[in-house]
Image 1 (cartoon, helix red, strand yellow):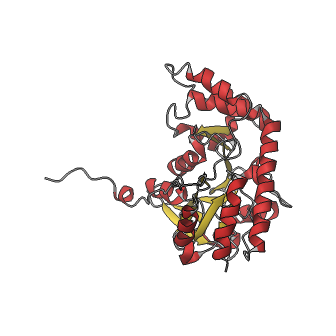
Image 2 (cartoon, rainbow, N blue to C red):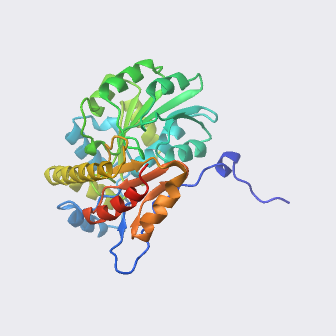
Image 3 (cartoon, rainbow, N blue to C red):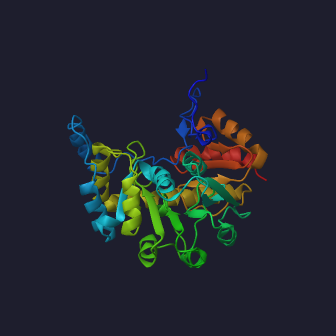
Length: 356
């Protein structure tokens, strides 16, 4: 007799490697710069809203996310029918594959990019088509368009790209979408959109309004600081958003998460002040790293990328010795989140030793 066996694609799913907490070092304050988390406490009013919602934990959450959709719709000026919520933007990627891909259909995306993409694609029995980034960590949009085949159902543009940092311009995105067949879903993953400071930055909402096949994925985990509550959302034409809602996990976004997200949307001024501060910290860190010999990819998220190749694990270990946890990608590089400025001296110290 044989034991039950999962589908072959399940056995092939790569493991997600989360950012690790720092190891305590005697005499040093430890800092976690490995998960692109927001170092700030909750925005004003969010903790109170979450606590009030938690008092109703005996009740199921609103499966239709009615109040959250209303708040999002008002904030962006979009119909609630064009919204879909999920457990973080990563949940939306799973739903996209589930909703639009038959087994063996292809999903095209840049690589290296968000680590969850190959996991979600493999879990959905679809096929990943990974297109290498350019030497400076950017999407090669021409190569991605050329990689679209008769089997392609979804293409993903991660902007700013996690973990390398550069963002796509509106001009380049428009030219790319024009090359993609209209039956293919174009996902613009904007998990870090609030941190972008560049000319010709993407206007995601305007882009989705112009196309019947564009889906925006966004999250409250980064700029809004709700990583522990897991709530993301998609903005898409109503038929696409409806498909995402149809395959969503019932009651997936908790009542507490919905309440915290709604309260976060009401604290826009404080949010943008915090984002601006993190952008200033990013600018400061990049300048210091350049002084010690690093020519980094353009950092448009809340992180910087060190293209270390085979030295990635050694760099991460050296940071760990100084009480700093960072996120290594073996053979490629290391991502360092923009967090507490007190950690930067140690990051720069290690970076100086590893400068190319």
